[in-house]
Image 1 (cartoon, rainbow, N blue to C red):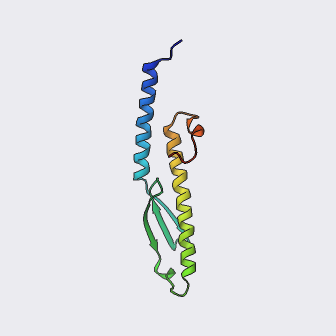
Image 2 (image 1 turned 90 degrees about the vertical axis):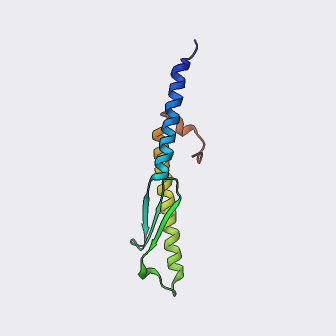
Image 3 (image 1 turned 180 degrees about the horizontal axis):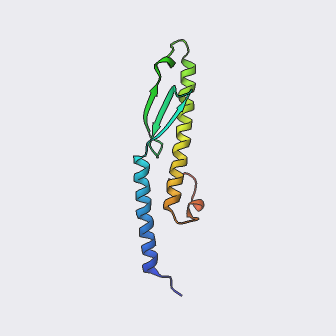
Length: 108
């Protein structure tokens, strides 16, 4: 028995539209992360692109650059993790059930 080609084409078109919408949402999202009790704040979009870094003035101590570097690295790692989870959730929502798990990690 032949598959329902028109029905399959509609499903594929809907999936493409859902994926395009998810990509737009990823680009327009603003995810904020902080470390050091809010002393270092990083904003990314849903794709993980860094949009903004804010440092509290009191954290800028020329005699302790290592602490500032550690806090920035910590905030950036957390921001990357948050963006990856957001991206995975959005893409999972746009894909037919079960398909996302069968794709190689990092494809999006």
